[in-house]
Length: 225
Image (cartoon, rainbow, N blue to C red; front, top):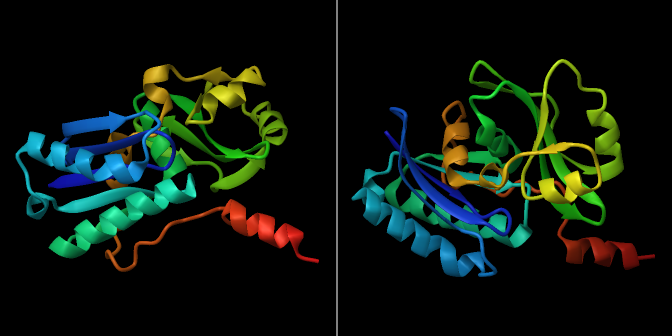
């Protein structure tokens, strides 16, 4: 069974095909200042070509449906909706933060997944990895950096590792341990791994999962009397 995974929830974008028998068939990504509308579908086409597969040979799709960049999440979700609908295959809507925990699968640790939510906040969720299993400790949330740092001091009995596109920013203001550069960003392989234990939805049911209103809408509400 082949899963096609996509992520464009932050600056980096990636695509992977995962064989549920336990192997990565193909993977590719871009971490540059190029809009995801330009990079994502060409990545899909090149990954399918490298794997010698067509969309009809894909058994399911997985996508980070949020939190993250409103535009980036929307682009990936729209792409997956279109592809899954065209071949009538199921979709796995994955929390971006949950997928980040799978960057560290194989270790025994507490994972603090962080994404830069701007305005001094981070999108965050906590997970524990033990024996190859990922257990969620908190819901996805938007949290102040100082509040998160104080919370981390309450975790004991295991190593806490920070992962995600907000990790470097968060670690620069705290004593937290940041994961190495090759594991820090969201990636489509981890999205596929997170999908293995998930419940699929139809292409029609797939929707972005936002923790906050878009910035333009927040600013409009702030101006209202």
